[in-house]
Length: 328
Ligand code: ASP
Image (cartoon, rainbow, N blue to C red; front, side):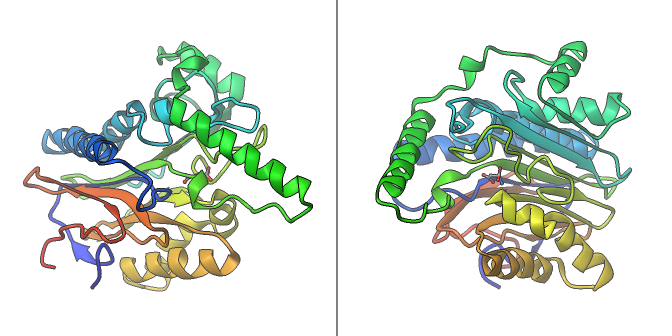
């Protein structure tokens, strides 16, 4: 099978993505090296938890925390800007063993949103919290809060200015606004299969460049951007409105559970057929309890990687980069 579509990994294992919004030519060689190093660090951080016998949710949380701290990705530190020039972060986490989940949206001050998703899952009666209330809960839980300027990076600021110029040009010439596409998204996600055979999934994002106030994408929505059950775990990245309408992450796992489809076929069907047919684009990572894995995407690249029992990280960025897979 072609890159990322089907392979079976040894357990314990961890699979990550750093967003489908990267295209050939977008990055300098130094930026590629930095992104690769950050992906490898995230894989190692999660792998360390798994080999210590920790549950899959610990590995997912550890890997995503590293990616949130890396300015290369649209999550945490490197989050994109809203139309109003703010950073508004969304996240979710799901434990496939227990079916428990935590999610938060519209955050401005939580340094590592995935840690808040974890606290909501573990220490509240709720699944999802938004905005100020979520940040009050974060403070009560001792989760690090930062000044909103922490999330300001030059690269993302310039991307917003370009998006605003494109929007103004379209309005001035009375042409239909070109809807946001791959240049506007990113996101990070992780899936783990622990030594007990349990799965977990998590996703964290700044959303889409130039999003309007209060806009929430798929990433913090359980079933849309994130899903984990006993057999299947998924984290998505792409044009969130389409992932929400398709309940994309849940749909992939439902096809595995109810229709008996192989994981790779289900993931490919939803991401590379249903989402583009509806007008969207993006990618996802999917991991089965049997170690089957898939990295479908329909953009020019998707930061992606995996690490198995031997602790050697494997990463790729562009579509043309082969991601080494066991047995392929
Ligand atoms: N799916 C995210 C959203 O729509 C963006 C992304 O994946 O980069 O908010």
